[in-house]
Length: 312
Image (cartoon, rainbow, N blue to C red; front, side):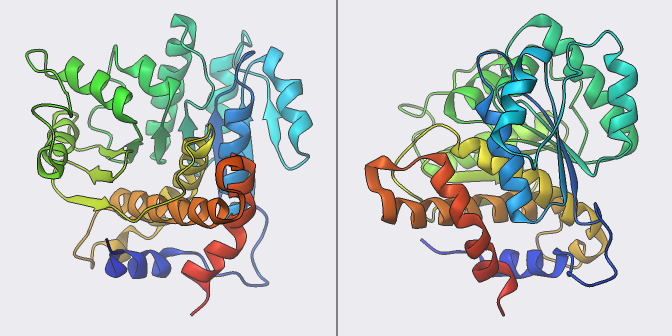
C-alpha cells in the first residue's frame, strides 16, 4: 500500500496560492444540487468539506421543504430553495454562470421530476464548461438515462459498489457485475471501471470500495491506502464536496496537467480527493473508533490538508 507521490505533487502545483490580492470567490464557488425532505444532512456534508478544503463559497440548491433545515446547520451555507420553483430553469441557468463546479446528488431523492431538473442543470453546466461531480441519488437517476453526461470529459461519477453495478449492468445488458464471481480480482475490477468509463465516452469514474478505482477509459489509478474502519453515513458526501473543489482547481490548471504522465485533470482531482478523505477519516477513527461520525472527519480536514498539500 503506497501513495502515488507524483500525482500528489502535481496536484500541489494546481492548488491556488493564497495572497492579499485575492477577492471573495476566486478560490472556488461550488454548487450542490441536493437535499430533500428526508435527507437534509448530505448536502451539508458536501458543502462543509468543500469549504474546509479551501472553497470560498458553497451554494446548496434544494427544495423548499428542506431549505430551512439545511440553513439551520451553519451560517456558512448559501441555501437556495429553487429546486421545486416554477422558474427553476431560469434561476439555475443564472446561478450556474457564477459557479466553478457543480455537484449533483447528495440527499437529492429519486423522483422523475428530480431527474428532469438535473438534466436541465447538466445541460447548462456543460454549456459553461465547468466540472460536474455526480454521486448518490444523482447516479441512481442517471442510470436510467446516461445521455446527459456521456462524452462530457469534465464529469466525475463516484459510485459505490451497488451504484456501479447498476450503471454497468445497464450499459452492458448481457453481463452481470458481481465481485464474488467474474470480477473478483483487482485487475478485473479495474478493467470494468475502465470499460464503463470508455462506454460513456471517456468520462471519469471513481468507484468507491475497499480500494478506490479511478479511470477515464484510458488511464487507471487506484488508491489502496486505508482510511477509518467505521462506515458511517456522510463520508461519501465529504468526498463529493472535496471533488467539486479539486476538480475546479485541476481544470483551471489543465495546461500544467498536460505536462504530467497522468494528463487528465479529473483523474488527478479524483485520486487526491480519495487519498485526502481517507486520511482524514483514518485520523478521526484513531480518536473516536466506533463512535466516529462524519462531523468528526470534517474536523480533521483543515490540518490534514495543510499537512498533505500546503506544508512543504
